[in-house]
Amino acid sequence: MTAGTQFNSRKITFKRIIAEITTFVLNAKGISAIHASRTVGLNTKTSFIFNHKIRETIAIKRGDLVLSGEVEQDAAYYGGHVRPGNTGREGLRPDKKQPKKLPKKRAVFVMRERGGNTVTRVIESETTEEILAANAKHVAPGSVIYTDEHKAYGALHARYKTYHVNHRLEYVNGRIHTNGAEGFHSRMRRAEIGVYHRISSHLLGLYSAEMAYREDRRRVDDASQVWEVIEMMLATPVSRVWTGRWQKTAWC
Picture 1 (cartoon, helix red, strand yellow):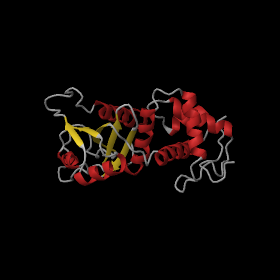
Picture 2 (cartoon, one colour):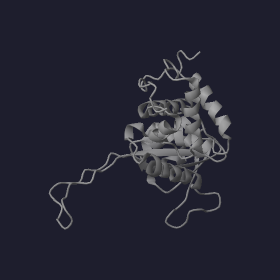
Picture 3 (cartoon, rainbow, N blue to C red):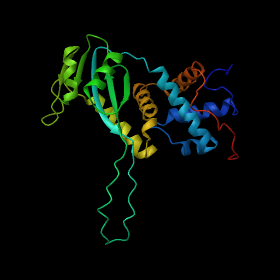
Picture 4 (tube, helix red, strand yellow):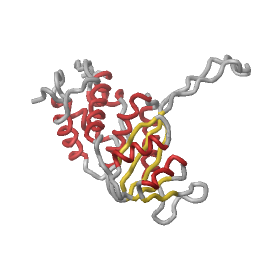
């Protein structure tokens, strides 16, 4: 039954699997592996691997979504962490000869259909090439796009009907705004700071897909979300990345 799916070679019972998925779904802003492991009674690494299997499943199932109608777009940078330097005791001047190492951040570009789905795409930076490529894959021709006045969005006029809001003057001008896209970034930032504390840049795509799924299912009851995640995982091939560490722990 589970061979060839995300549950392949499982060593934990379905009771614990459903408990882990339920715990994942119930937390609207995400859940850390430590919190999940304490709630369900699994090894922390087991919860970490399993939660990433859920995120990978969500990312795969949402990878080909196409938006239409009115679509809001915005980008924000996540990931990276600068470790404070060892500058000595209070009162000592820091060594100015050693340059501060900049964090490795990447941008999450969000496309949010009003009244519909949310799609995220991790890009190196907010450039015209990245914006055009994302829209070509995920936004249907004839759609109306709302963005801010970043210069990278100027090329969209050649393909779509596009409106820009000048955030230096206003946030909303009738139907011209990006409040939905900015709301996604607001909640994802809270998850990064308050739940995960730090997101590695190479995992940013999985976390952003998770938060997009949570945004789109925020008005769906928890039981329906649990069964939806189970069905998606049963229909997804074995992960080639998130494997191992399925051992049961002695927590309980």
